[in-house]
Image (cartoon, rainbow, N blue to C red; front, top):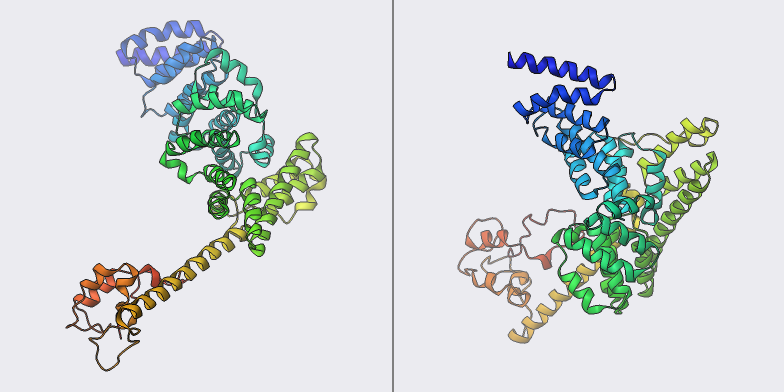
Length: 486
């Protein structure tokens, strides 16, 4: 009888809500909430009723009571996040609900849009770009998504909402970071720094904000503050492109050009759309005479700058010609998903100009945001690093040979085909390659031939010597290198 009463009340409450009577719906639902405050259907309908009568605080409470395993949990989290973001102006609480909604249902594109807008307001560029690229790949991107992806970290997103957040939740971490980002865009570092410090104090995991604070400390010449900030970075920030770019800026300001090159390369490798990393890397490489590699990075930066300019021009005044320009610029940068989505927008909004991009087709589902073929500079830099490593390996081998000669008054035996208990020269110089412990384990009464299995060949097989491995070799570095065979 109790279950029948619940079902009947739910049906009647739904009808009252549909007819625009949320108060009457709640009168029917209150007894059910008292009986079972964890009934997901009742909680969800009560939340909808509270929302309809603009009692947003009570609505969020009821949405939050919908059980985690209930089929409407994702929808409830989205609705709670929507209210917290747009009505109650509680950004961090909104973020928590919206992220849970996406964790439960990755196809909630409205939740992605809300989070992207919130992160954009706070200047969390990597997070907002990731969400907008997902919307692009799903075919859900809007014109705003495309423009803001093109603008990147230069975008000023929804600053009008900041005043509402500051009034309702002035001490919220995301409110602090949004205010800091606004000051940052105005180059008001004096205002931005304490705001970043307060926000990061609550949310040290937000690496975009960490990078901005580091850049402020570098720009203001606060070396002690910079080093303290750097020492306190969460480990996850080591995978963040802008953190590496800031490290590059700091190294360059201290005349460590090679250190800066390494940092900018790490930034470009992690984010092929990072304009300043490509620009600075090109300049630094050119200063060391690496003109060919420098030119590749500079070309990449020019393409990214052209995309930025095209997006800005479209944002000022939309036209078919400007859509074509942005689409082609995105294609030139290897941003295949964005290029295709711009082409789709042209076909729908300006069909008269669709012929211009008729050959631009949808990327395959597994395609990355940026095609590797659009990043030749990264490949060249990787090979340059391998060449440097190879030269260093050869230098170490040469020094080891000369140290062996200084000790033994002769160079090691090259090989001995007649007696396999004499190892070749590569093993004989182990003590001079910091491999004395491995050398001491060798039994010179046993064979070193690769044709037999014994303590010597097993030890050599299990301990690969990095100095003897070519950094550019496509072969498996764990394959038998036959170091000790004759």
